[in-house]
Length: 68
Image (cartoon, rainbow, N blue to C red; front, side, top):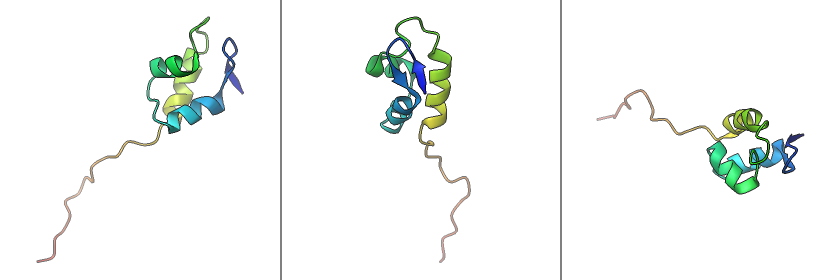
């Protein structure tokens, strides 16, 4: 589906950019041109980008048991 009609950017292109490490709407705009025209696609693009980013690595919350 086209998210940015002005620049022809699809949801697939946004997900692909997220998989390659794009983490902000500003960087997505720089790389694809998305939201640089009328800007009406910015909210939807940000939502797709946030949903598509790989999960952050979180520290393990429990202490590891070390066998002595």
